[in-house]
Image 1: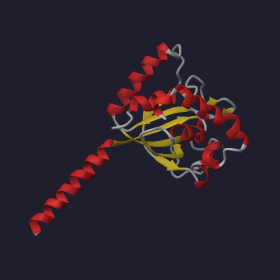
Image 2 (image 1 turned 60 degrees about the vertical axis):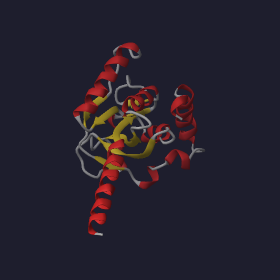
Image 3 (image 1 turned 120 degrees about the horizontal axis):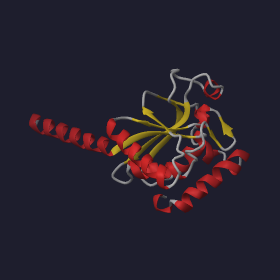
Image 4 (image 1 turned 180 degrees about the vertical axis):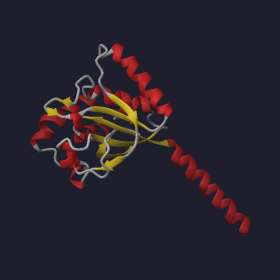
Amino acid sequence: MKLLSILLTLNTMIITENKEEKFQTIYLGGGCFWCVEAVFEDVKGVIDVTSGFAGGKLKNPTYKQVVNGYTNHAETCKITFDNSKINLENILEIFFLTHDPTSLNRQGNDIGTHYRSIILFNNSTEKDIINKYINKINITLFDNQITTEVKKFEGFYKAENYHQGYYKLNTEQPYCNAVITPKVSKARKLLEKYY
């Protein structure tokens, strides 16, 4: 009976380890995090999208501190995905086709360093994939104009609860109608294979 218990424990540990390995997390900022979240939350293979802040130095910042420029954080989404269904290159394709990576510290009328285009990588493998992808599309699609910041992930701070799932809860709000709905519609049209 003791041997059976040990074998079951080991088998559970192996299953858990394999399950964790297939989930990957990347941190993306492409302007307002409501937009990034809305674009990614229905993508096949995306497990979770959380809106928050990253790329700055202040721990546990508030939304007010970030938008007032006190933190150097960017509005960022933590995107957890199942890499057996969608890979990092696919995530990058969606990201770069749904925001303007050539616009420094702004997206449309959203202006400030907290709206900058940013990718935070977890390890050197991700860094290499990201840089290779950017180098390719910078030449072929963006005429060497990409300003996206690529830096090592140091911390992510979840935004206040009212920011989570914002678009789905507020689709009739004017900002959602004017900015987010067209962005989501464009993503679904251009990148139909991911939805």
